[in-house]
Image (cartoon, rainbow, N blue to C red):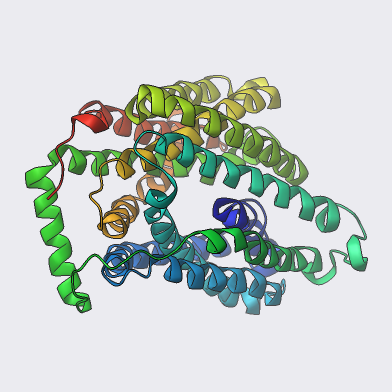
Length: 420
């Protein structure tokens, strides 16, 4: 239910609705607003990379993982609702970017604490199923809230409670719904999960925490090098997976001619497909192993991405088919990555290691955007056309393939040595 409850921030706010609203002409020139959004997102990612492992480490020491998660979830709900105050005027762009950036930081760090609680609800024999079910519930929650706000406020000329599009009220009221959704649907999480006893290690200051973190990395390299390789491989392919979602809607609109309504409907269907497939692949995770699931998903994503590039001029049907195939594979790869690491973490270090997991992902988070833009530029140089956006998918495929190759050198979880 935490996945379900907090998904509006990912689906509605950062992907399909608020980010699109914030980069609209109402806030200024498109290039200016888009660049500002990219910079604020990068700064937020940098702060996550710096803070996540240390905060997770101290949560392990204090035994306050669930308490921290509860506070962070409430703050995320408040930040989501506060986006209501971002009016469609240039003067509100900075406010929107700041709230969005801070929300991204809180969401990522809360995710570290959330991932660390998986040991309370799963065992090594069923962690794949549990992880897949949770991730799948997130996708399904995202689609439900997306459809609710679309049909209640955004699509009608006059929505519920007389809400219209004037002064961006339809989008702004939707943000209130997102905040309320997060607050209500995460109640079961905090009614069930409990803080565990501290791991016995004293809390230390920020710099001392980093010294211990680097010590953990050295220990990881010396005692469980395969785990270190997995963190590297997962950083690559998770960035590729993020690129699929970040630029999927952009390609749908810019290359295949999807309208704004078409993009939202596609996003709804894609989340349903992703949610169901992630739950089903979670069962295979426990039977075949997460490494097999990850490699299968990455191979399928790479092949489908190339198909989109090859068939870009065949119309919207191509994107519907290939896009939904990719949606069905992204979630299983994400979920299996989480379950893979959960099987390796020694007791009492889940917050620290999942914090390191978040950091490694953030360190390379520039790759997909960079390769997406680079591929578009290469396409323009090769073809001489004005619109070579469809070349961008090849840039994302390169990152996915890099993750696939790196993952080939990682052994299955039961073949790893145990960290000290």
